[in-house]
Image (cartoon, rainbow, N blue to C red; front, top):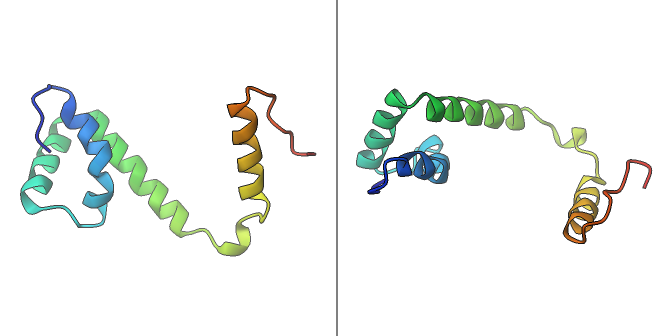
Length: 91
């Protein structure tokens, strides 16, 4: 996590947070990131939100997922790309 710009550390944190949460970060980079987290409330909040998200997703069960979700998301994305109205739940 090295950068000359003052706010670069915050941007870099969002890019390497997965490595941090999975324990796959080099000790020096981990220490630098943790030092930044002690000083930056915004990044500390972001880390907290990511931890909550990971915890919530791990709690989901396969049967809770609606089988049509991937197709619905794809249709919404295609409509957005073509600047069309998004499909409603009845589509």
